[in-house]
Amino acid sequence: MALETEGDFRVVERGTWSYAAAVGVGPLRFGMAVSEVVDAAEVLGSAKVSVCRRQCAVFSQTWKVEVHRRGGAPSAPAVTAYVSQDAGLFGVACDAVKGPQVAYHGLLLVGREMGELESDMIA
Image (cartoon, rainbow, N blue to C red; front, side):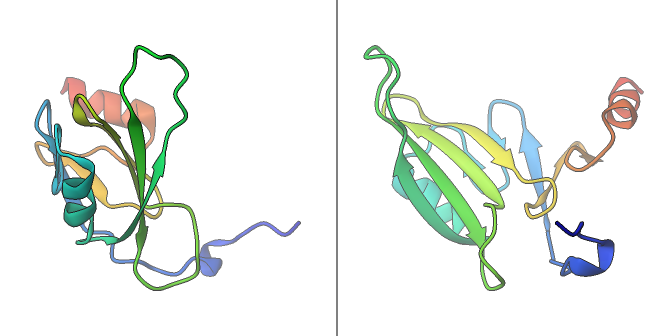
């Protein structure tokens, strides 16, 4: 199996989404319904919604929304959002390579060395 080199990756305009604690990430706001998440995700690409298998009856129905960038070859989702029937949008995961850059008060959070991020957050 050949390893991918830097030249194998197509440069993608990633954009930057801001993170606000207890508010949301980019155009996604915590508490949104599935249809609202799909509509908001259109700024990045197409969304695919699937039902998460319930592990325990006490939890409400939950959906996973995978957002893929427009164009290009099929690949892992750029953003994955989790939405429950009771709480709405409660989780957002951005791919470190394909997803948007995520910033908190101007500090980039995605695709960085953990030690460097920790030092910057403390400072």
